[in-house]
Image (cartoon, one colour):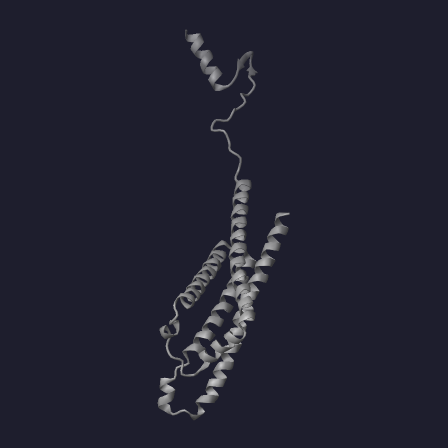
Length: 215
C-alpha cells in the first residue's frame, strides 16, 4: 500500500512539474521568434544603432524559459529518485521563483510608474508583448493562475515525498538494528563429573569446597 501511494505521488509530481516545462519551452520558442524578427529588423540599422540596441527583453525571456526547463529537469529527477537533497533543492528553486513572481506582480500593481524602472527596449518587443497581454488578458490570467497553482502543488507534493522517504529510512533503521543483548549472560553451569570416586564440578564450586575443607 505504501509503495502504491508513493508511486502515485511521484506520478502527480511529474505531471504537475511538466506544466512548468511546457511553459519554459513556449517561452524559449517565443524568444527565438522575437530574436528572428529583431535580426530581420536590424538589417537596415547602422553600426552605432546596433551598439545602442541591446535586446535585453529577448535575452531575459530566453533566460527565464531555459531556467524553467532546468527546474523541470531537476523536478523530474527528484520525483524519480525520491532523494531528499534533490527534493529540497527543487522546493527551494520553486519557492524562489514564486517569491520573484510575487515581487514583480506587487510592483506592477502598486507602482503606477513601474515602466520607468526598467530600461528602454529599443527593439520594440517589450511593447508588442505588453499589447498582446492587454488584448488577451482574460486567457493569460487563467494561464498565470494555472502556473501558480502548479508551482504550489509541486512544493506540496515534493514535501510529502520527502517526509515519506524520511519515515521509511527511520523504519528501515529500526528493522535492521540488532536486538539488544543483556550485559551479563546467564551461563549454564556444567554438570559435575566423577573421577576415581571423587566428585568434581565447576571451578567456583571446587574453590568453595576447598575453602570449606580448610575451615
